Length: 78
Image (tube, rainbow, N blue to C red; front, top):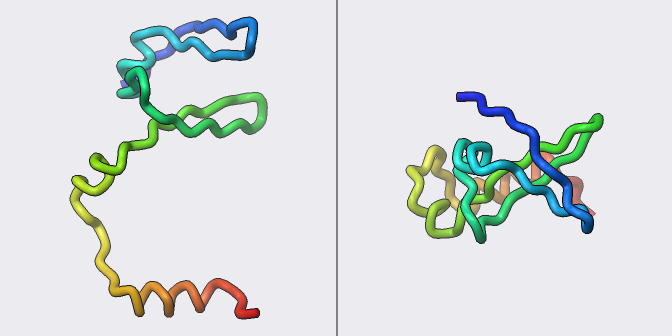
């Protein structure tokens, strides 16, 4: 579902998205969000809490050694 609305920027630069936009995005008071600014636009992404992140179904499994090997393939060694 796409929800659009006009919000206000406060005197100190605070962003005030309307309630229906916050609700559609699942953003509640106290939530942390990530702001990404590019090409005259700001994208706001809700950051899940640690409890939410760890309770989500895992989509990949790798051992610590496998992660080290994958990291070594893309990062230069010093």
